[in-house]
Length: 92
Image 1: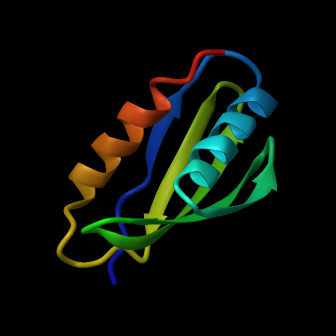
Image 2 (image 1 turned 135 degrees about the horizontal axis):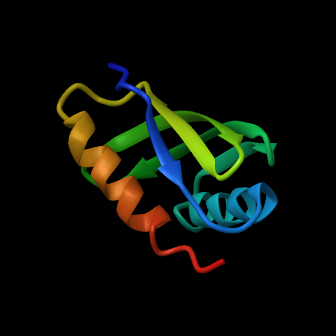
Image 3 (image 1 turned 180 degrees about the vertical axis):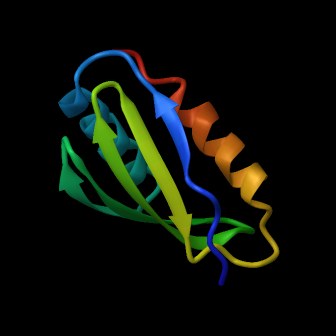
């Protein structure tokens, strides 16, 4: 398993709303999440990708995400792009 470089995502609305949106997204993917409006971690399994873990912090209107335990055959850039696309759909 590999780790990816951390990346930041800016969002509108409150940190609590952001955390609630992340929680819904993770649970929709049958993943698990722990944390609160300051940060946490989640695990998601995806078809053809396998499972991966993300640790994140929330400060102001920016979340810093660090993907860990990603299968070696999955490029970090591809996973980051997919996460940004899904997070970008949040309507706050």
